[in-house]
Length: 252
Ligand SMILES: Nc1nc2c(c(=O)[nH]1)N[C@H]1C(S)=C(S)[C@@H](COP(=O)(O)O)O[C@H]1N2
Ligand SMILES: [Mo]
Image (cartoon, rainbow, N blue to C red):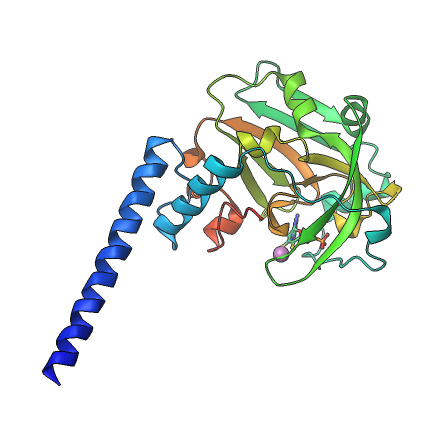
C-alpha cells in the first residue's frame, strides 16, 4: 500500500520534473533565438513560447495549402460580425470610394493609400482556406495585393519586429511577426471568387493570413503600424484576441 503510493508519488515527481525541464528548455530555446511571443506571459505562457519558437525554427518559410478551383466552397461560411458603425456605413454608401489604409511606424515613407493605390502596387490571387478556432472552415479564391509589395513601397526600417493591423471595428486589432508580414501568401485582400470582396467577408479590405487561424484575418482593414515592440499596443499581449485569452500565434 505504502509502496504504491510512494511509487505514485515518485512518478508524479518525475513527471513534474520532466514538465519543468521541458518548459525550461522551451524558455531557453525561445530566448536564444529571440523568439518570445508577445503573450509569453499570458495564460498558456511557456507553451506559447515553445509553439512559436518551434514553428519559426522549423517552418518559417512554409506555405499554406493552395487548392484547385474545383475545391472552392459553394457556400462559404460568413461569420457574424458586430453591427458596423456609422463611419463604415457612410463609406459603404459611397461604394468605398474614400476608404483609406494608413501605414506608419518604423517605415521610411509613411503613406495613406486609397484602394486604387493599393491595387496599383500589384495583384495576386490564391485559393486558400479560412479555418476558425470554433471548428469550421471553407475554401475561397482571394484576390489582393501582397502585403510584402506595400511594405517594399513604404520601406521597412531594420529594427522592425512586428506589423500591427487594425479594423474600423475598434475591438479588432492584431499583429504578426515579420516572417508572416513578408510571407508571400499574406494578402491585402479586396476580391473574392472573381468579384469584389463582399462586406460580410471583410470588404472592402481584409488582411488574409492563411498560415494562421481565421481570427488573424482581420476584416475592414484601416491601418498598419510597423513596430519593434508590442509593449506599446493595448496591454502588450500582441492583439485583441490574445488579450481575450486566445493564442497570439495561431499558426496552422
Ligand atoms: N473586423 C473583424 N475581423 C474579423 C472578425 C470580426 O468579427 N471582425 N472575426 C474573425 C474570426 S473569429 C474569424 S474565424 C474570421 C471569419 O471569417 P469569415 O467570415 O470569412 O468566415 O474573421 C475574423 N476577422
Ligand atoms: Mo473565429
